[in-house]
Image (cartoon, rainbow, N blue to C red; front, top):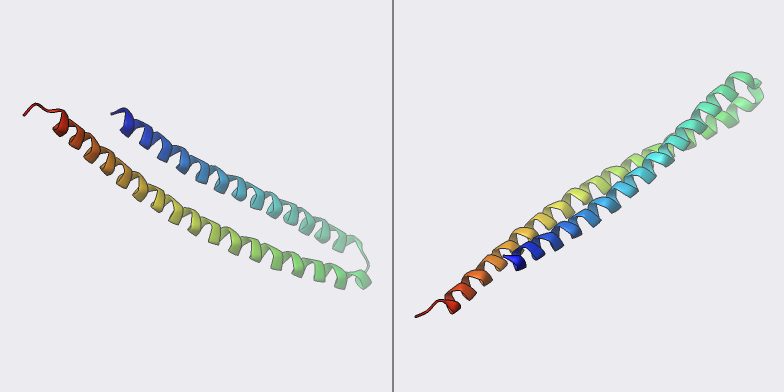
Length: 115
């Protein structure tokens, strides 16, 4: 029973580490997105205040921000898919480990049983 508990704990810790790394990456992406949105708002307010000569520069910056935003969303989507895949693998490994532990316990019980 202790072996099973330890193997399940180890699997849960591994899953937690993966989830934590994904959460950190997600937070990082969200922070980058928030910074870009702030830049966009600054550019929009600056556009309203600047003369028409500088509006082309602002439009270019906006287009760049939109492109960066789209890239970040794609990257975020890929990371979410990868995270789901890793969660499935962890689940499969946990089930496999639990099955092996159960088989080992049954084998030991059979070996320890009097004839």
